[in-house]
Image 1 (cartoon, rainbow, N blue to C red):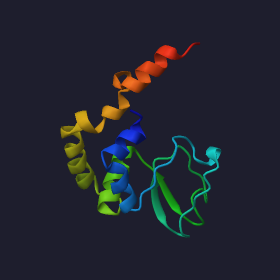
Image 2: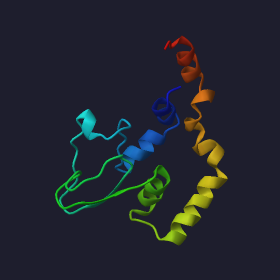
Image 3: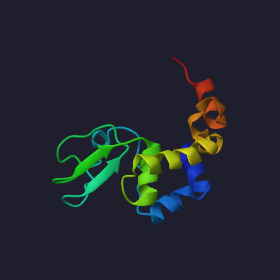
Image 4: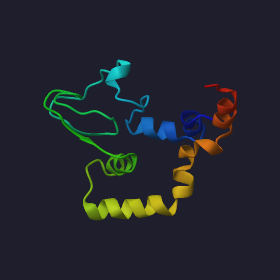
Length: 120
């Protein structure tokens, strides 16, 4: 099952949407014609791979962060202190087997089947 399909099936995409979050195709976003911008002067955390002046909006403060830090920021509604981050990461580490299961492509049946059919 593809990651986004699995996340939708498990109800996570609805949770993201109700919180106002968006998920985009992995990459630099702008390369895929994603010109989405935020309100002027906003502070934003992004898991994108690119950042440069006015990338996400006029006079914005954009911080490129890991998926883990983005999750903590989204839960708090702000950038956490180091103590808050470490506390949240402790929760992530405790449940890492379930949280990071989508990164094990060699264990996802659809990926394994597609790989068998791929030729060099």
